Image 1 (cartoon, helix red, strand yellow):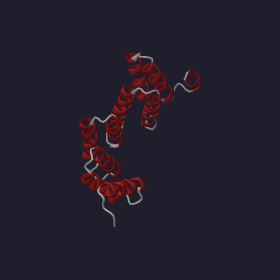
Image 2 (cartoon, rainbow, N blue to C red):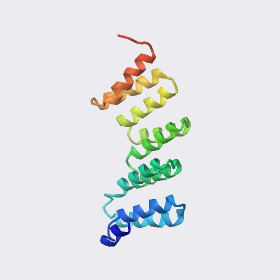
Image 3 (cartoon, rainbow, N blue to C red):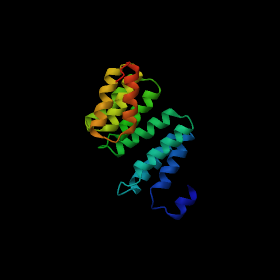
Image 4 (cartoon, rainbow, N blue to C red):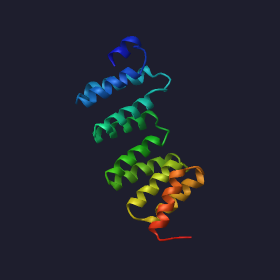
Length: 168
């Protein structure tokens, strides 16, 4: 990050990189300062979202779930009109089988875009894990309705039919 910053101190990415590193080292106050600097440098709003996603991915590789959650929350603040960050937060909580939190974030995403195929698919998976295959099936079918090429939704809908012992 030092080299990137020394070559292009006007770019946002090195600041986000420093922020992620500082956060991983436990220096959250300094990390927040660098996140803010990155956001200030990203005057067109073109790089922050991608940087938050990359930081979350790195933190996930390091099994730091709380840092992943913080990165996705930053994403939702940065791209506040896009349901994607809320979907990702829902998936993190779903992975931890924290259904109330997962539902909260999926609902926030649906409030932003009730026709979002990704959100509907994720809610289908939510219901699948809760073994409510009928509701899962409904969500997968709605997902396909809005995104006809959504392969995962077709596959998961088929698995629901198998679980329900519905063979045609």
